[in-house]
Length: 514
Image (tube, rainbow, N blue to C red; front, side):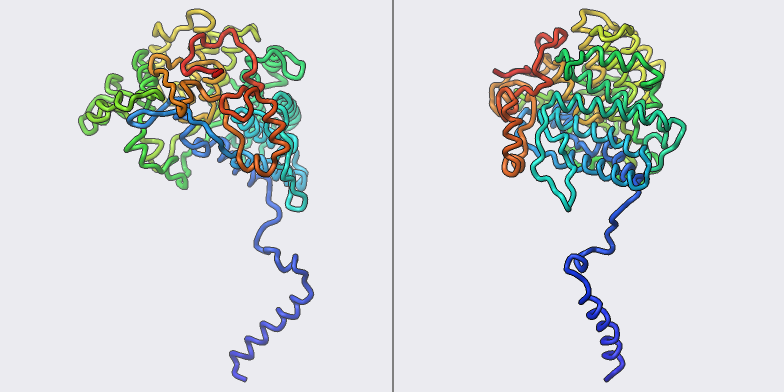
């Protein structure tokens, strides 16, 4: 027997004998796949996806007409979509809880409540009733393929309770640092501020409701802001949940999409609003008109910017002249061209101040709404690096000043909030348009009765995933019964079943389709 064959038999035979003692389940196990991980690793991944603008894609910003195609034609053809991405993150939250329990570190458990609330509240606002109490809790050894769909009011009430409990529990750890936190550097108190801001975000989304599970919305809101020691909130832009990309050379551009160069253009609404008011955020959000490329034009001259009409009722030629002669502005190249993307703020201090301004305007608190309105604008400008002198000039503009009827004041608050969400904030700009009727796009858009444009009405929701219709029919059918028009894009979910005296009296797009 030659030496090569001898060695081959020598090493293989023990493996054969050993394998005879193993069950099929044991043989099938991947010994290289970890069965446990430190919760800090999961926290990092949740931070990256929850606070990163690229994980929401670019479509939410088109739906709210922050940009459109060079010829226009953004439309309302909402159909079905899945919610796999959202519930995958919810699953990670439960993974983090289990790993935190294993290591006996409750801080990660309480932080998981924030991320779970964030993804579930986003999902319920997109669809209506969705899985909540039984969502994403199944394990490989005990899967649950048919979770129940909780009524939206119960989801909202439950999330508020969970966030309140998380804030209170984390109060015992204010002076500690938590590992894996790439947003606040482990600062627990800043996480409490964020959690409380999210409670305020949920409540302001209930502006058409009087009560939540028997408790008055305004009183719940006032109870949070009226107890700054027990419920700390943000005090400056630096408290915001900003995903800073400095030093992260792995992030090569947020959006690797040639359409940013060849097709996507900032909307005429945004350009005109900023140009009329001397808003120096415009050069931070858009490039000058294409025809000025290489012409040494002045980027601080706002006349050098022009947007595309994002018209769902467009005839197809109302943007042609500007398109052909280069009189359109691309989105700023920082999102698609620079090696390291810009800092992202999906939720932060500017939004908090606009929420507080609206709450005060509604009489939920005794605060001065104008003070919070101005704070929000200043912080939004600061985030984009606008000089204090340019910000002061903007605030002094007659069209920016906090004047008019309460409805008009709400329009100013929401429009500034909308501009703060430009290419960040995920679906928030759309949710605000749906909730308040602002911004008012009526000067830029025309009524079109083509069904693909939903007859000029704003779709109120996505239809439930086909996979749920097929595989969880009994549960999703109960949720569909609670919608006023069934599983339709124009059905009103619980959050939208009510009235609001401050709602835009003549919104475009129209809101409710009969």
